[in-house]
Length: 293
Image (tube, rainbow, N blue to C red):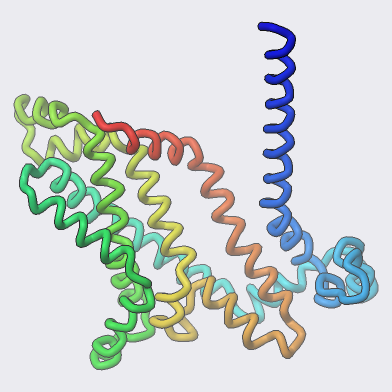
């Protein structure tokens, strides 16, 4: 390699590294700043006189005797019972993920192996349904839910989120099944397996990364949802995201905004750990779905 080419290569590496470092700082700063500020009192974190108060915490030191305090977390989790919202979120996300994956794998496999032309139109209809704003879909459920007196509870909300999420899981899993050669399950059926046995014991283990990837996106959709949960859940059955919004709306006048800050950190931390734990499965799953066998 000539010195000129080597110089260009070094410049490109330096530029790319600098860009990635700057991007990571910009992307991570809001979260790290919020985590740091969640251990301060409101007068420090939202100081109008000196932004460095959020770093040094002079008011926090004066009030608590320490530069850090867990009062925000205690207020959110104990006084405002944020733990109830966390349990509701866990119930909603787990059931939405399991139900979406169950119907998504069966439907995606059926459509991927179907030789009929209507398969394309089913997928197109699902795509149109998925592209519609959530608020327009939820409004159609309100009247029957009120009439049947089933508004405000977790099961009905789970049903609606599954209905909204199902077209996405159907499309994504359909693409994964297309990447698996038909010869695989046909060979299993020649060896004596039924269609369902070939699906369960041969096809699913091969495309497991795709199932994990789709399940993670379904989990995130249910976890981060605000429109559906805010409209369909009563105050006592709220999940974490609408609960945080209620903190900002109801406690700000009382000087307890730090409850919302602590709740935000509590809601983001599990997502960070989840993505960190499943990062290899996400990458392999997305790559597998992009290659057709």
